Image (cartoon, rainbow, N blue to C red; front, top):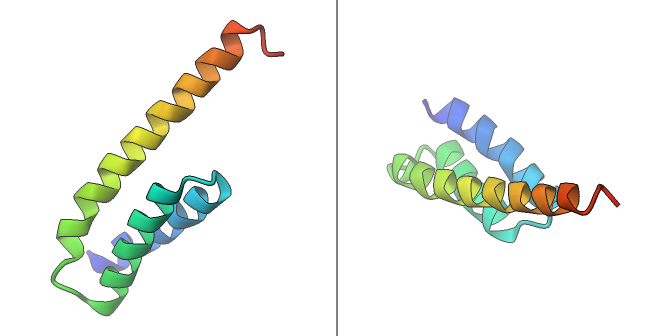
Length: 73
């Protein structure tokens, strides 16, 4: 449902901003705008956001692993 997608996208947009993850922020903003407008493009924008979120999570995991390998210094 569009209301739920807009809510989730809004949260991910903020997360992307906090992490300085531009692609995540931009994909989330596009989905949020489309969902709030009731656009027919809304479902099509959800998959790219999911892909960007997955890539962002993988990058964060790699950073965390590198930090742990250095002994958390």
